[in-house]
Structures are given as structure tokens and as C-alpha cells.
Amino acid sequence: MKEFIRYVSLNVMGMIGLSCYILADTFFVAQAEGSFGLAALNYGIPVYSIMYGIGLMLGIGGATRFSISQGKKHRNGKSEDASLTHAVYMGLAASLCIWLVSLTGSRPLAGLLGAEGDTLGLTVTYITTIMWFAPFFILNNILIAFVRNDGNPQLAMIAMLVSSLSNILFDYIFMFPFGMGMFGAALATGSSPLVSILILSKHLRDKKCSFRFRRCRPAPSVMGNILACGFSALIAELASAVALITFNLVIVKLKGDTGVAAYGIVANIALVVTSIFTGMAQGIQPLVSRYYGSGDTEELNRVVKRGILTVLVSSVLIFAVLMAGMKGIIAVFDRDHDPAMREMAEQGMKLYFIGYFFAGVNIMAVTVLSAAAKVKAAFAVSNLRSWCLFVPVILLMSRLFAMNGVWCSFPVTEFMILLLSVPVLIHYRKRWYD
Picture (cartoon, rainbow, N blue to C red):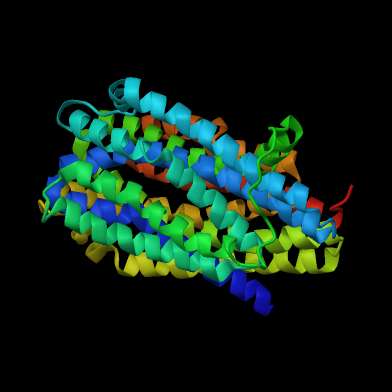
């Protein structure tokens, strides 16, 4: 129980800190650029989510492979080192692709994300800048996963918190004393993973570190295994990106940039809430992989049960806190005192956050299935959480119920996914090794 609390609490704290990357940007951009800047930031966030998801996929995939081998007592230095090395190789390749997009396609990409008119230039500036920091976002997520799985969740938590605090500091410095606007916001966000990487490097110098980077030829089997184990994590982040893009495109047609700005407030608070549940899920991931690898089904099932109970209790507490402080939270981001935006944001928070009574369990289920190498099941649930189910639901409900339908599409989708994820999880809790 102590180990469960240690891993989960430290990772939740770290993930909350990490989510403040975007939350700090939202606050400072709202103060410096008003509703147009807030809308532009919301158009650009999916690009950040995709880069973050790639790093998460490679980190969790490689670290899961590493932890399962430890659980099986196959402490082979070569294979452990190969996991990290291949994750880094793939991260660098992905970064190169992102750089190419930043050089040739930032403006068309911003247009595809929904930006136009006064928001287009601001969006282009934001996404172009953060894409240049892709290697650092990806490497940071890889190192966080490996350090956490190597028995040092405290250092991973410290790295995430300190990098987030540095982001807030950089945001203020770049946007106000230096007057750098959206470029300053993106520069602050892009610089923060460098701070985290410096802190995480301490573990690499420790004699107890069980993984090492080594030169080797890329092995397709290793890369395939890493991608398979981590792909559901990427899909989870893509779900956020797809949700943002779809919401933006639907809302801009219904309510224009004012509606997108209102959704920007709801979406950024949602990022923090999602990070809490993701932190819980990633916190138990090393334990699930270890017990699965060692064949200890009793401890494995106990960890899963505790994880589900934790997210259920947390969902009730989080919803109560948000509803109690809703008006104050929205006021923080409403520089222009826009009554239309405030009314939409309040209605959105009341309806949208009902979805987290179901989303927390779905996030936990996907992570558990991935950590226990149940790749097909995790992939199926993850895909439903992204585009397969969500996009048709929001398009249908927005036509039937306008903005209320938009807000309700998230809880409706997550509830429908819950009807699949819970039976799948129950099935595997009874027969992990079939």
C-alpha cells in the first residue's frame, strides 16, 4: 500500500505541475493578448499534445519493456540499454519530421486547425516556435518514464514540478518585461523541458541506474515492441488533440472566436483534470508491469482495484471543487470582462466535467492494459476515446442541441466507452496470462 501511494501521489503531483505548461500560457496569454490570443492558443494546443504524445508513447513503451524484463528477473544490460537507445532514436526521427513541418507547413497547419483572421498570425507564431523544441519535449518524456520505472518516482516528480515552475517564470519574463507576446509564451513552454532534462540527468549518473544509452543498430523487433506497448498512450494524447480540433471547428461555426475562447478556458482546466487521472494511471504503471512480469497476479489485481477506487473517489472531489469555484476560475482568464464568453464557459463547465466521472476509469483501464502488455485491448479502447466514437458524437449532438450538445458530447462519449472498458478490464483481471 505504501508503494502504491508513493508512486501514485508523486506522479500526480508531477503531472499537475506538467499540465501547468499550458495553464500558465493560458493565463498570461489571456492577460497580454485578450480573447484573440486565448483563441489562438487553443488552436495551437493540439500541436503540443501531439509532440507530448509521441514522447509519452516512446517513454512508456520503452520503460514498460524495461520493467517487464526486470519483473521476469532477466536483468540483461544489453536489452535494457537497447530499450532506451531505440526510444531515443525514434524520438530524434520524429523530431526531424516535426522540424520539416515547421519549416514548410505552419501556416496551412494553423488554417487546418481552425485559425483565421485575427487569430491566424498568432497561431502560426505559437506552433512554429514550439515545434522547434520537439526534441526536448520528446526526450524529456522518455527520461521521465525510464527514471520513474527505475525506482525513482521522486526525482521524476521533482523534474516535472521544477520545469513547470520555470515555465511560469519564463512566461512572465518573456511576455511582460520583454513584451514578446505569443512568441514569448511558446518560447517559455519550449524552454521548460530543458530544465527537466538537466534534473533527470542526475539519475543517469547514479550507480543504481539500471539503464544506459549505448550505440547499436536499430532493431525492428525492439522498435515494434516499444511502439506496441506505448501506442495507447499516444492515442490518449491524440484523443485530446482530436477533441480540441473538433471542438474548435464546430464551435467557431456556432459562436465564432468568442465561443472558441470560452472553450479555451474549459479545455485548459480539463487538461489539468486529465493530468491528475493520467498521473494516477502512470503512477501504477511500473507496479502493474513489475507484478505482471513476475507472475504475481494477487498483487497485480490488488493494485488495479486500488487504482480504480482512487479515480472514482477523485472524480467526485474534483467535480465538487470545480463547481464551487467555477465563477472565480473563469474570471481569472476573462481580461475583457466579456459576459457572452463568461456565460458560455460557465455552462460548459457544468456539462463538460460530468464526463470525468467516466473518463478517469477509462484512462486507468487503458494504462493497466498497456502495462500488462494487452496491446490489442488497450488499442481498441484508446481508439474509441479518440476519433472512432468521439467525432461522430460531437457532430451529431452539435446539430441536435447546438452548444449544449457540444458540451455534452464529452460525457456521452466517455460513458459509452466505459461500457466497453470495464468488461474488458474485468475479463483480464480473471485471466491475465491467457
